[in-house]
Image (cartoon, rainbow, N blue to C red):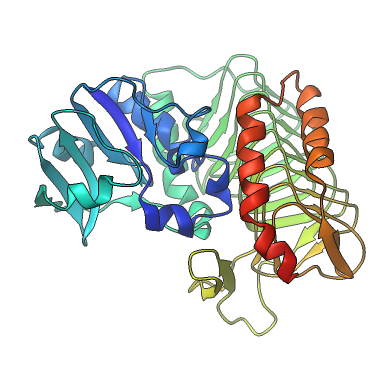
Amino acid sequence: MNLILFDCHKTRENLLPLTYTRPIADIRVGILTIREKWEKQLGQTSFSLTENYLHDKFPAATDSSAALYINGSVLPDEQLINAIRSLGALQSLTLNGNVIAFKAEKHHLNYENFEGIVKSFTPIQYKGNILAINYPWDIFKINGEALKADFALLTKGRKSKPLSATNKLIGSAEDIFIEEGGKVEHAILNTTTGPIYIGAGAEIMEGCAIRGPFALCEYATLKMSAKIYGPTTLGPHCKAGGEISNAVFFGYSNKAHDGFIGSSVIGEWCNLGADTNNSNLKNNYSNVAVYNYREGKNVNTGMAFCGMIMADHSKSGINTMFNTGTVVGVSANIFGGGFPPKFVPSFSWGGAEGFETFNFDKATEVAQKMMERRNLKLEKADIKILKTIFEREEKYRKKT
């Protein structure tokens, strides 16, 4: 039976701009992406049901075999997996009117029609609670719970590499796990507030102070004297320094110098210049409003702490300041003094004094150069995705 992780239309739009470049299931929350969680739990690879322009990079199922469809915004747990496995054909598992999963005897659905077809299935009400992401800020909001679950999943029955005696550990040694090739020297590690996971080839340099829960994924680097407040995740191949609090970096992104990033989500291939800072709390302590693509306006997050949402391939120059609740699209280049607008469309070039369109060819050239530094290539599928985003966001750039 094929395993297919599907994008709910409404949720996908609510998660923009992060979902411009990926299906929902490829968002990292905790240590793993949602797709990695399901594949590890169910023991099989998965396919995507998402917008067509993404399928060259995130393949759809190619045969018509029976399929299990799971909502890509939902995180797995044992109770939920058992409920899904008990579903019959043409039954859907639902919670509060939202479809969590369903089975079909043949895979014949596409992104445009599947939600209408599933309405004819027999709904089975799920009796438990779920952990899911519906808006970008949910990613850092639930990151602590997701990180703890991933830590238990990844370390069960395994033995950590020993922690060097040069480090100061506060809390239980059982709550720190170092994969082979992980390096930690002369750091202060506090696991009383949550576990600390250090991936293969990752390095925590001397002088760092970390309060869990925290994940430093494979080949990521935490630079000297960094201060980390959990729950925080630094995805694969990230480089980070300065002060970070309750933030998720998807992967291959850099915040290599001093500056503060808090209550934020940073996509892939982003680079934050030295002393880039974001506000994550308003001076009047009121709830933060954030731009929502589906609504076409700012929406109330219901949260007092909400920093920045930055999508893939975006960059900031030195001393850049981001206001509370800022949303930055794909491949934006932001620099200069003052605060830029709270909504920066994709492929924008400029700052507080105004923006112009970041030329597409030049933007892809920058993306290629950054990827080459990690011995990777901007593929044709990536360029197709970026071109689609460039065209879709033209209307926003004209307004700014």
